[in-house]
Image (cartoon, rainbow, N blue to C red; front, side, top):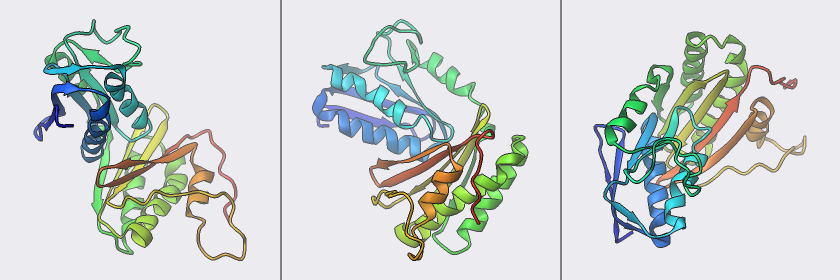
Length: 246
């Protein structure tokens, strides 16, 4: 990314990109944006006012990042680009990324996001981490009027946190937020080892059922690699039936 400079404004939601972006620098830009989205709740604004984009691969990285974080709790990517014609721009490479011609307009959209509807906790990889995560779930579901999701969310988040305790063994950040009628959960750790799900495990094998439990209670789940670790996320819906887990 020698021709593209990424500057993160720690005091705001803005990530400034300047210089020249081509296909060779797209992956580094993608990684930088994902890292910022993992570390900061709420939408992030990519300000490309001072950036010259040479090809469709470089321009398409913003839509790729937005798709990657679509199911993360309280995460979105907006664009400040004077070259586009407002949020309903026709540029196919941006594929629905909300774009604003001024930074003030983009930041106004960020300010309109209800960040009060986000709960975050930094946890150590200890035995008590899962209990603390369940307390966060209970608080959130009560606050957001989702009592029916307390049990499945506790199941999913317990397994996500315990996976960090058992395998990653790094500090973690737990985040949850409502979106319409769904509940979005995520655990961010500092291990590059991504979870793998092989379906049902033999009844005579101890352990290995954490991802099966998540797959049972969640409408969808997945993981995203970021520069210094990963984000494991899931989405729960009140209409989903939870199978008997006894």
